[in-house]
Amino acid sequence: MTGPVLETRELGIAFGGLKAVDKVSVSAERNRITTVIGPNGAGKSTLFNLISGALKPKSGQLLIDGVDMTGASPSRTKAAGLSRSFQITNLFFELTVAENLRMAAQVLEPKARAFLPLARSTRALAKTDEMLERFQLGHKRDELAGNLSHGDQRRLEIAVCLASEPKILLLDEPTQGMSHADTADTAKLVRELSRDVSVLLIEHDIGLVMDLSDHVVVMHQGRKLAEGPPAMVRADPAVQAAYFGHH
Ligand SMILES: Nc1ncnc2c1ncn2[C@@H]1O[C@H](COP(=O)(O)OP(=O)(O)OP(=O)(O)O)[C@@H](O)[C@H]1O
Image (cartoon, rainbow, N blue to C red; front, side):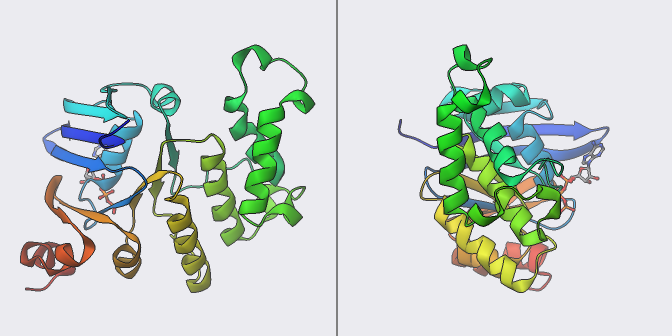
């Protein structure tokens, strides 16, 4: 497949009179990190909600891998290859690290095997082992997810997202609340991930945005204000005025 893995065309939604997302067109290219930035209330989370199917757009179009997914439910966008990681962690704290991964990887099993004993979920179990090793969580496999450090939980969360082999990963502020060291580790991880999967990111840490992103989209008051390579966006006077707060 060529072309962007994800594309929005003039996507829009309003809450009452407020145009939270107003004719926003973005595309995420394959195996690239595309980052959406903008001040509080710019419409970033709402855009993610429209892309994942949590909200239905009032206007515009959404394409995943070239297929029209406008108005599709979250389960349909997920089946089309979209995986979303929330600001609020979506791990099962009362399950172990390995169980969290295996549940996510279960979608890789053919439907006919869905009711077989877990031990025979060979693809899901192999994927679990692969993720444990890659994310250096092997020694914590039988630990309850709820007992992990914040950094390990975020790492596990990204691993859970990848376990279902998505085409595009939506990450909503993956470093929020992290220590400096955990932020650096997560940045490294996101960069690694982008070798296998396209990433669409919301991030407030501007240093990280500049460092990580291949392409930056700037939102302001529901609209797309600018987009381009990080350095170009940062130098844009309109972006500096709206986002960085100086002229
Ligand atoms: N369900 C809703 N009902 C009414 N207004 C909403 C709803 N969701 C978002 N909004 C409004 O839409 C605008 C965009 O909000 P959104 O959360 O998308 O911004 P954001 O860029 O993600 O901000 P932040 O960086 O603070 O998370 C805001 O003015 C917000 O108050």
